Length: 341
Ligand SMILES: [Zn+2]
Image (cartoon, rainbow, N blue to C red; front, top):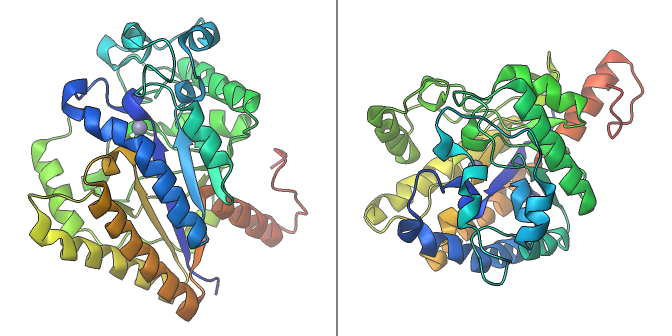
């Protein structure tokens, strides 16, 4: 039996991930807090040898508007709801990273790159919504290829993708694969986490909130075999969104931590995969409480690592293992870094 694996992924997006749904005045402290959060998280990860995937919006690779505008593709998404488009938001973007801390991330990307075992993945170029009305395969491909190009210009070769708002169109997976991407983060296999329906009903959101604290839908841990068999790309599905500290629901915090720890323990004991994810901006306020929460999870990981050999992995670590294992089973000698699969 393989040892269990502990996967962490963070969707790094700053305002590109929320400009369409949250007024900036309402969320600015969370967004500004990201500049403090990322160094703290990286320090904690380094101290405990945690591998993680930072799924980064392509627009964040820039440090000034001139370069960003120059890099925009001619073919841009034509969503029916224009508000969704990052391109429609460009008029609100400042001149450079010093005067606009919400839309540029090159300093932070460089910091992540300087830390060992941190994978920089793509969260698409423009925070592209695969299931929005008006989205097309062609527009997705243009967006992805632009992300890959900008990554390459910055010395990053993307091997994994996290789809914005977890909107996955299965027909896009072959486009990812053809462009050298090996892994994506799937959703929990449960109707509550299904994002294909048009409206995210309030009842569903409420149940998801309850599910953070009380186990309504199971542990969402995944067997190694489920990743290996019958895939074109490796799906590294989410187990749990790490909901940030809530002052209002402070009394429920122990339940939330207990739920996460239980899932991790089960994965460690049974040789399965547990995948925790969140956004750096979720930690952008109440930073100390959020870092305490993360420290508790990491110290539980350390215990499981010592006891069961539970191993910290990025998404690309998992896909490398899965592809090697799959080809070993098929009797194919294969270098997983090539696209010959
Ligand atoms: Zn996002």
